Length: 179
Image (cartoon, rainbow, N blue to C red; front, side, top):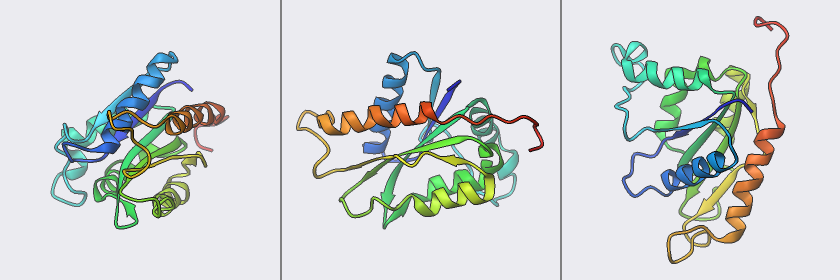
């Protein structure tokens, strides 16, 4: 694992998925893994298809962050049984930069029943961009995953560590850039 880019897609100032992204970034750094977190609250990303959206400086910065990465982790909130629209917009803007990247997911939801919500998003990445999806992802719900002091429950911390280990096990090796 050469470099991990965490794309934190929630725009909410009190976002649990943003907190999870920061926890994961800290964990990566503690393990000596090169990483960066892209907090989309700090980028004024245009909507895909708007005039100049693909050539905007914000899109270019996000694209470069994805291209630097060997592994990408999407930290996403789950709304209405799906990833948020911001995450979907990222694919529209920089999808080709996700080609042959190892991709993992960190999800935050209000309840326990949306754990399959990333599958449509993951399918899009696999089928359109040949991204390699790590089958283990972290799914956290607001009812049972957090302690009163704002820290994660120990079982969630353990699942976060296992996600990192699974990410480490998956590498993309190409013999020819055109393959």
